[in-house]
Length: 123
Image (tube, rainbow, N blue to C red):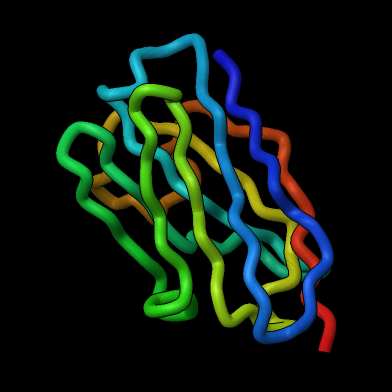
């Protein structure tokens, strides 16, 4: 099983980035893929999730209206489009997979994790 998160980088406030999470080694359509982030000195924050089987999406209040999660089922990849970025969005972003989107923000219930990609938003 492998989850590979990529697409991070350095961007100015107000800018955008698109993160991607490429999955392999499990039946993609049976899972939900979540995105989390962790800023220096802070705990891990759940920011979004998509249920692949029914395309339901979930967002934390902190990113609602700015971030959009989507899936490309042909490529077993989930994207996180991040617009109107703020310095407060600076963090390492991780993707993770679990069998259901129920309680999607509970990090301890995810089965697989990717390695993280750094997002830095300058003011």
